[in-house]
Image 1 (cartoon, rainbow, N blue to C red):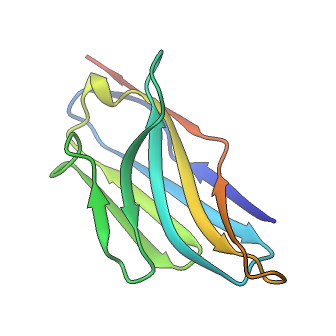
Image 2 (image 1 turned 120 degrees about the vertical axis):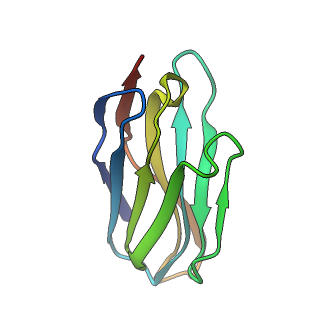
Length: 120
């Protein structure tokens, strides 16, 4: 079982910045890729950014140049969000692929989400 806990969301004015954090805990062999997804109001969940164990990154076109994803160890991930826009508003979810310590199965895990609201 892997628990993902996000923090750092909040209310910010357009042009401002926020830093999201995600910490993975529990029993697992290792954590592979991690990522951030968001769900804008009334819309489906969408990819924001991903990062592999080797620190290769991928970003949605809408956030390139403004957001930076990073990891400081296999269990902790960040999303630095600059130049925020009202359309960045949504619930931001942490995602991580873990390897089960007993079966070595790949498991996709989700956090509970943290709200980000950008006012115009």
